[in-house]
Length: 330
Image 1 (tube, rainbow, N blue to C red):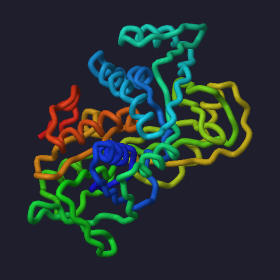
Image 2 (image 1 turned 45 degrees about the horizontal axis):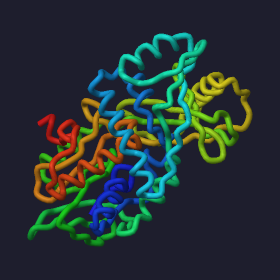
Image 3 (image 1 turned 135 degrees about the horizontal axis):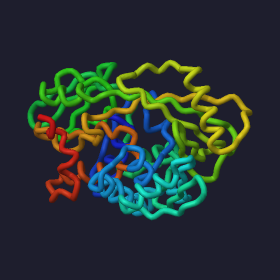
Image 4 (image 1 turned 30 degrees about the vertical axis):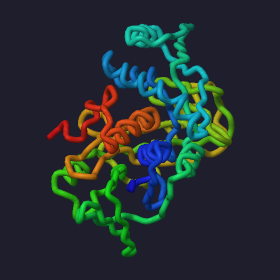
């Protein structure tokens, strides 16, 4: 059983189902950060924006390399258009990308790379949830206990679910009551990061374009401009002033005029102390975590799915698995 149907939960469900497991996913069905994201598979630009070192850049690149096979296996569309950074600092950005091992093309005030890609989040989540062997149940798990070699989870309306193995992929939700204190502490330590982006119902670009303070990405029916990174915030109310500033920055980035009123979307990301996911065994028998990918949930999803599935099956750990150990801060 998997608790949570964001990209980490559904990617793990699809991975386990592809390995022959029957998987039940329980989720409140109220939307999540994965659904409102831009769907970036962007090791180069994310490494650049985060000031990554060579080791972190290699991790992001290795995660990206799992995507073509993952997309084929689960019927997802992976878009591989060039990605661009535009601005007066483009030359310095190009130098940094090359130093991290990414191939770039330089222009006046722009650096482009073919190393990044994207997916359509809504379509991809739908297809992952529809994987044969995956059953999606709409409910909110409010408590969990371990008994007789299995976990018993209770839903909001009193429904009871039992499974010998559970993956918690609950985003920034509170830990279900009844969890062991150590596991609850790991979940409760995840920091929320509020993200607001704007959907523009017209095409603005045929590729992801980034610059200081904004990005613009293609999306079904138009484009998205994003996204704020508001650490410690989990409010879901729209901030119109911040949205207007962000929209103006995005339109200026691609040289587009104002037009249709933007439609604002909000997602609350989860982040660990080092910005990397918490994925793998929790230290409790039969209980695993897939949490806190910050803003790289889509990029890291196939790798996290493999890490968690391998841990459940007792396989040898893949490279980078120790980096995501949920107990690394203990």
